[in-house]
Length: 228
Image (cartoon, rainbow, N blue to C red; front, side):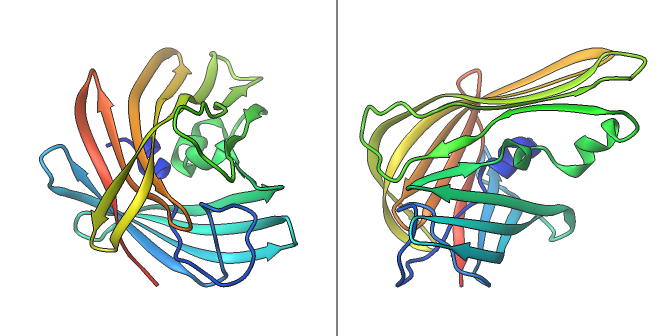
């Protein structure tokens, strides 16, 4: 599974007792959780570990910084970084720069960068049939000798049903959300990678499971396995 999809399966949290801005994404400083990723045959391919580094809230908003580490199936660290999340009036805003890792950004380090971004949104309430806002980001090197740009898009987001999902972390009643995830790069040559995504998201727990498909074939999936 690509690093884009790996980062897409990033967030989970357990119930807490104080007021929160968003029903699905709830935090407190120091909390940790883990999702494991598998290939289409169910073989473990890696682990995504997260920890809340900081959390600042008001009555109807919050800002949080999440440390995220991606490990191989043998536990070797592949990449790490911090993810930023904000919530205002019940809507969680996810900076699309969270979906581009530092290794991918190194190609642009020597040049001036122009970044255009539309945040991904998770509203406080979901209903079956609801269409959710797209997210996108484009990075362009403005003074490179060859055309260089990178684009990430998450589109066609729709709540299609409700299902019960069971993992090592428990059983959760989830909303099922489908979307398309596209990653494009142009550095002399153009490369496009696209996936169909299915997610299951539960109140107070956020993403419990995520599957990625290419040409209607399962490529891999992620599953919540533990938290504390």
